[in-house]
Structure formats: structure tokens, C-alpha cells
Image 1 (cartoon, rainbow, N blue to C red):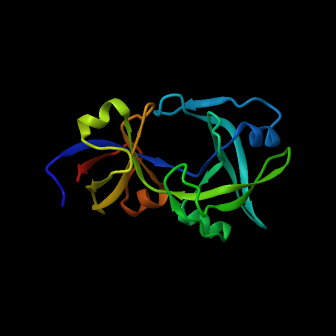
Image 2 (cartoon, rainbow, N blue to C red):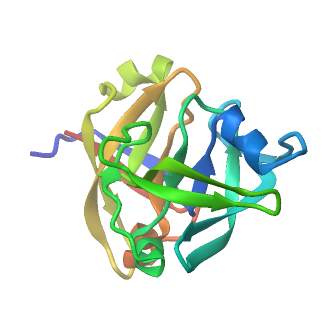
Length: 191
């Protein structure tokens, strides 16, 4: 049942990208990681560096590396990307790599096979300080109401963190299904 607690929220459409450990990054690049632009999540950025993700002879080029380095490798793609690569990764929340697939990352310097290929579950970032205001905790599910020509309601998981910036993250498949553009406003309903 949906409560009467509705909040406007910006939707950010997330394209395919990779999070790497420093060790794997150094196997793929000789140069230091460089910032292309900062993301709204405090301290996080899109780098200038890209990789090719490969499954045998199937590949997707120019996949953005996000920073800073993490203590695990994670490759986030959409279902359409998965079909292009001929793989079937699980839908997971960020950092949950249970049953994730192996995938090859490639640059001019070389190739590295990593475990961590997933389709990221849609999620709402909320700062730890704001979680009480929204009456949510990490892992809660909320409903997202999307208006427009192809309106509907989807479910998203709450991700509470110290560096959280209040916004909805969903992949290109979800956005395209609802004709939703990056940075458009939607409504979050707290259950």
C-alpha cells in the first residue's frame, strides 16, 4: 500500500560503466586516473578513461571508468547490452556481486578478466542525514511514479550513504521504457 508521503526527485539515467580496484586499473592503464566530470554523489566522478568490455568476439567499446577506486570490481550494463554481449547477468544492488558473471576488460595495454558483471537494480540515493526526513532506511523499497506519455509506477531500492545525493538512478532500458529523459522530475512514494 502506498502512503501519502510523496516527494519529487530527479531521475538520473545511468549508462553502462565500470568500477575498478586500483590493482585492476593499473593492469589496464599506465597513466593515473583523471577526472572528466564529478557526479552528484559526493567524491565520485566519471573519468576520462574507458575500456572495452568483451565476451569472446562480442564487445562494447568506450565504457566509462568511474572513480574513485573501490575494493571490488563491478561492471554495470543494461539488458540490451547483455544481449549484445550474449550474456545473462543477474539484477543486483550495487556491491552485491553474488552470482555475478565474469567479463573481460580490455584496453590498449592489455586484458583482464573480472568477476562482477551485473545489471544494476534501480535505486534512490539518500544521504544518511536525510534518511530520517524521508522515513526510509537502507534497503527499503519505494515506488516511483513517472508521468508523461508512457507513465507508470516502478519500484526502486533505497541506498543510504554518507555521500548520498538525493536522486533516482535507473538504467537506459528503464528510462527508454517510460520515455524518461535524464534529469527529469518524477515522484517518490514512501511505502
